Image: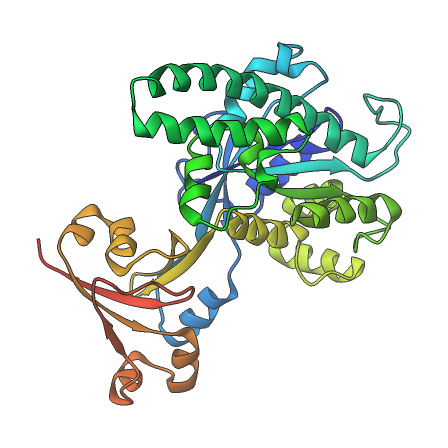
Amino acid sequence: MEAGIVGLPNVGKSTLFNALTSAGIASENYPFCTIEPNVGAVPVPDGRLDTIQKYIKTQKVVPAILQLVDIAGIVRGASEGEGLGNKFLSHIRNVDAILHVVRCFEDEDITHVDGKVDPIRDIETIDTELMLADLESVNTQIEKARRTARSGDKGAKRRVELLEMCKAVLDEGKPVRTIKCDDPNQKKEIDGLQLLTSKRVLYVANIEEDDLEGTGPHVQRVRERALEEGGEVVPVCARLEAELAELDEADRQEMLESVGLTEPALAVLARAAYNLLGLQSYFTAGEKEVRAWTIPIGATGPQAAGVIHTDFERGFIRVEVYSVDDLVQYQSEKAIREAGKLRVEGKEYTMQDGDVCHFLFNV
């Protein structure tokens, strides 16, 4: 699962990307973190890993990983090929969600492309380009689907209905993600159309160092906008986070305390992006490693096992499960078993966030 970082030029997008992908990344543990220059891997901070390691001594702790793509800055006219328009649009089409970096800081030394900082105008600039690109895509797809539907193809008829629904929303100047879907299958069908504005968005307000809580007027306007869309805002000072990413752990903690933070804002951002993608973690724990595994919310036991190895899903028999809270209470897996708190679940089990698992399988 990937999230794409987007934003206008000079909003701090690349600074944020570089800070995210350098903080806590060890190349020997994450060999895929430099697939290409604009792709990176980010560990998702999770205190439960440290809790598990406290009771189950292990050689290595491996967090969940979020993949990020630093997408070329967009400008007006991108939908018509201006700037890196087509390249931008093809990259954003391939990600699962969008982290939209919005400039909420004043700095005379960093020129704004429109001459003045206005976060809502900036958001609307990018939304407009994405909506124009979607309209072009929808119009092309509708004509093709209508031709197929004339032959009586039920799938094509359904596709026409969905495309017409999306076109109506886009014609009103609204992104496709604003369509209210009571039926989860309809949401999946719309996502399957691969429209840019159907993707979930997390706004990242790039703030000044004297407003680390994001209480300034620029951020408040972004929050109001996100609230209208049912979205979320994470305030981040990209410049400060870039400095923190270059420090060792002791110096980083000292600097965090000096500015009144308990953890880097990037940790909050990584967790928010993880949630935005509809992901959750389960854990495996043993002498060699404690590891967080990434699964979609709603995944079954066999599907979760398949993340470790496809053979595990194919030969799934059952999974033994307990919670991190159980481990804290009983302090060992042996004591959890003796207390009768170790659950045995079958193929229909829906995984819960934070499950600690032992899978039994037969291939």
